[in-house]
Image (cartoon, rainbow, N blue to C red):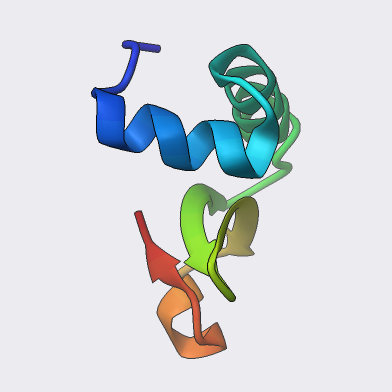
Length: 67
């Protein structure tokens, strides 16, 4: 995973602690997703989160913004 720009680094740091923690969580969730679906980095209630959706679901319908 490429290292993000300064602005994104600050947001990731505030939500995950550091880039490695974010990268590990994102990679783990993506690798362990069974079947059809997606792993997303989303903005949710002012924080960044890593979430998964199944099939053609999207975080937008759950009030989250892909980041």
